[in-house]
Amino acid sequence: MDVLIRLYASYRETAGMDRVTLPLSDGAVVADAVAALLAAAPALPRDFKPHLIAVNEEFGNLAYPLSDGDDVAFYPPVSGGVDVWVGTEEIDVGETADAVRRAFNGAVVTFEGTTRDNTAGRPVLRLEYEADERMAAKVIAQILEETMARFDIPAMSARHRIGRLEIGDVSLVVAAGAPHRLEAFLAGLYVVDRIKHVVPVWKKEHFADGEVWVGAACDPETHALHLSEAPYAGFLAEREGSASHVHAHAHV
Image (cartoon, rainbow, N blue to C red):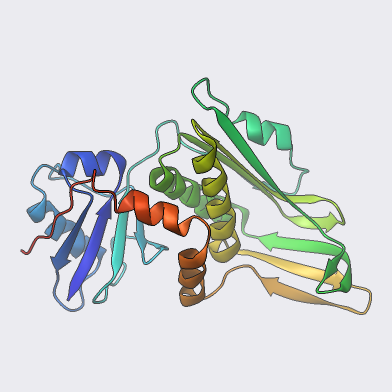
C-alpha cells in the first residue's frame, strides 16, 4: 500500500521536501511510516520522532494503523508553546487576545462563542457542557499546534468553558495572532471547526419542555468533507501545494 507523508516547518526544511509518497507493507502503522521516511529523507536525524501526528485529519500516535491512500502529517513543536485553558470559570476574552499579541503581529482576530436563546426556533433556557478537562485541553493544544504549522502563524490561544452556562454566556474564545489578517481570520475559523468536530466536549441543551445531550464530535468522513468545503480549504490547498516547496516521490 502507499501512504502520503506531509512535513511542516522545521521538519520540511530539514528533510528538503514537504511531502513524499511511500510504499508500506499491509498492516503497517505510523512507526513503519517514520522508518520509511528516514530511508527516503537521510537529512532527517536518525532519532527523528514526530512531535504531533495526524492521519486523515485525525490525531494519532506511532502505533496508529495505516491503510492504503492514507494522508499522514507530521508537525514539529511550536516555539514558545500554545496557550490553552478548559474550566468552569468565566472566560476573560481580553486575556485570551493578549496571549497572542506580538510586536510582529499586525492582526489579532478573536472569536467568541456565546450561548444563544434558541435552537432551530426552539427556546433554550441554558446549556451544560461536560468534558474531561485534561483530555479536552490536550486535544485543543494539539489543534492549535497543527493550525500554527499549517497556516504558518506564530501565536494562538483558546479557552473553553464547561459546566452550566446561561443565555449570553461565553463558552469558547479562540484568538489568532499573525502578521497579516487573512491567515489570522482563516486560522481562527479552522480552529473553531476542529474544536467543534474532534474535542471530547458534550453539550446538554435545556428547553422548557425537555433536554437533550449533543455530542460535539462527528464521524471522520463528515469532518473531512466539512474541512474540504470550508472557506480555508482553498487557502490551505494553495499554500501546501505551492511550487515554492520541494515535492518528492520516493520508493523504498
